[in-house]
Every structure is written in C-alpha cells, then in structure tokens.
Figure 1: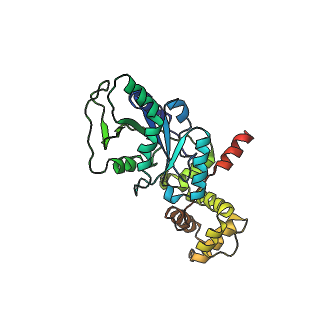
Figure 2: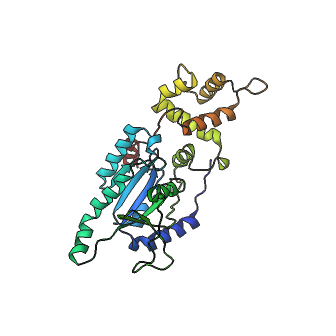
Figure 3: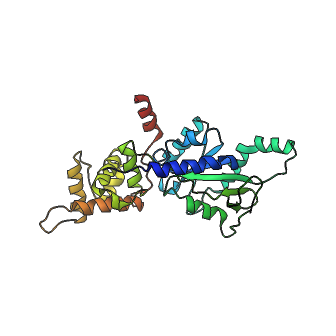
Length: 290
C-alpha cells in the first residue's frame, strides 16, 4: 500500500503557519486521540519552535481512556500540556482557555507591567486533515461567531474569530500533512478514517487492524465476531469472521472484501468499543531501538 505525501502542499502550509506565528500567543495542536503520534506532523516542533502550545487529543470518546491518560502523561514529561477533548460533543473545551491562560500568565503580566491593556488570548489551531479542526472552531465559537476586525500589526485580509471575551482564533488553514515514512503510520491513519478509502487497499488495512486487535483487544474481537479463539494465521481469522457473519461468495468461498469492509466499518463505528491504536510505551521502545 503506497500513500502519497504532498511536499508542495506541506511547503505551502508550513509557510502559512510560520508567517502567522508572530501574530499569535499560543498554538493549539489538534491530533486524533486514537493515534496521537501518527496524527501529528513530524515537523511540528521545528515549525512552531518555542511558541507555547497545547496538544488537543480530539475524539477522546473514541479512544481507550487508560491509553489517553498515558499519552497525557507522556506529553507532560516532555513539558507539553495535553488535553483530552471531543469537539463533536463539546466535551473538555472549557479546559482549553483555562490552560492557555495559565501558560500565558507570565507573558500577560509582563505586558500589563508595561502598560498594555488586557486583551484576549490569540491562538492558532494546526492539525493534519480530518483531525477535526473545523468542528473544533465551530464548537468553540458556537452561534456567536464574530470577526474582530483589523487589529494593530495585522494585515487587513487577516480574519479573526472571536470566542467569548477571552480567546481569538486566527482563521488560517494551518493544515500540516503527515509524512508516511513509516508504513504503520499510513495504516493507523487509514483505519481511523483519516485517509479516503478509495485510495486504499482495504484488505491491507483490515489485516493491520485485526492483528493489532488480536494483540491488544482479543476479547472484544472474540465477542463482536463470535470467535472462541483468535488464530495466529490471518487468513484463518478472516475465514472465522466470514463464516460467523455468513459472508460467502456464490461458490461458497469467504468474501474477504466484505470481511474487510465490515471490520473497518465496525471499528470506526465503535462497535468494538473505544480503541487506541498506538501507545507511548510502543513509541518509546521504537525510539530506543533506533
């Protein structure tokens, strides 16, 4: 399975983010809570440099809560604040402003001591496609969307979205594409629906998902598909699921495409519960092995 990376798009997004960094106080980096590492752009640290940031673990309702807690600790150990949110339902969004105020308290105190009037926090949201950026912006501003107009030092074409009295979001694309150097990254993005199914071999994605679940969530796999034991052989596992669901071709063979589509659809539809497809321990083991 080959998934293309778009260097031209990445270069443009990088320029946009870099140019607008000086206009904001803080970066909100949006990632998928199910795959917090794979849904980040690998150049994000280099791009935003020392600008304060909060990592927002979106779709936290779809992720394994225990693993999400591990990720929050992982980021904390790196000196980065991370919050679990669900932009679709609006869960955890109040924490964002509270944490941002805490991170920027010293900066705003300095401004105050210089006679600068108190103002709202200016933030930019960045994330890879399908991380939920638009949903988060819409949920934050609600029905009271308002552009704050031209601000000192800001170009006239610059649009700001006002979120209450305490936060202003820079309305910029801020889309940073992932780089698929590691095949596993592409598979994780695929199984969570971050890549269009039309450009994928769904059987490859289903094989990855089933092997992962067999290792980390075997009981859920057994219960959902009525399997008494997870076989080591992946074809045998496909056969068991196909037989359990009655996915047969006219000659009686298992319809592997139907099995693949069903497995992926049911994982995304949370029929197998809340799942996390990567863990800090795996990432740290990988880094140590390099």
